[in-house]
Image 1 (spheres, rainbow, N blue to C red):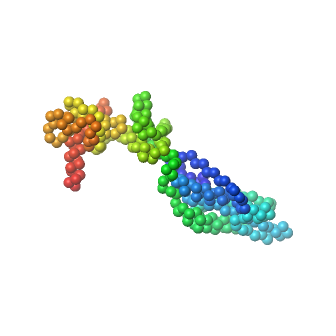
Image 2: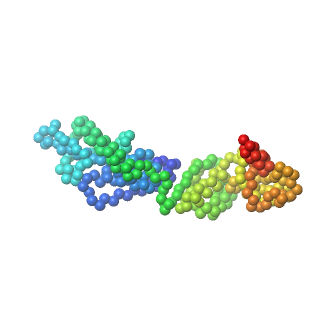
Image 3: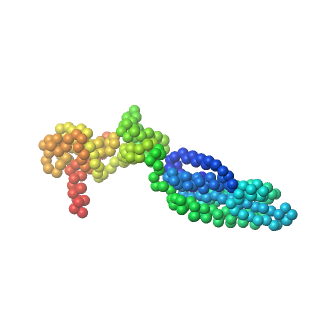
Length: 296
């Protein structure tokens, strides 16, 4: 199964598959391969291809080794009295694993060729007529009871901002969403949550903090502080800027509170980032841009 398991970046989970065999009259290992494929797909693990496994057996004439017969899907008695248990697992595209047990001195090229051909036919039959008829593809969503892990990558230089002084920012995200967060030194971020919506909200906050701010970008922000000369607006988690009173509206503004108050949601445009990293915003320019978009 290992060749079809998604990468850690695609699916950052530890996977444990348990196969409990209640009765055996054939290859339990290859039955486990088929059962594992169904279990993983049903659980929402995005495996690359379905995998099936089947075994081929062999009986050789003791008096004339050139006389032999190969057969597929051996039962227990055939395994006990036969001369070979040739197990092959794989996808439609190729083989992922082989295990061979033999009781003869060796296998001829013809025996091996027949074993591969038999197991290929059996493997394709199982995939097309059993596995894919039961579940045609991995489920798009995992069970609502499964823990959710969301991963993303940020610029390592932004890790400090995501964590914040004394862990202030990351603790704020955790308190507001109830998630757990791990950040690796290379910028990989893992968010753990039993609530997918909370996980997505935490992801949005982290990506917002790590986002590169450039003049011209427009955001929906929240007024967090009002002064006589303007309003401070948080437009991304941990990122705020000043909307000067002259940039609050298209008309002249006498008093900031005539236009906005603390808690208001307003559209703002990034106008400038000065040498000290302070961000100047404009509601007036954001409104003009929105008006132009509606005209177009």
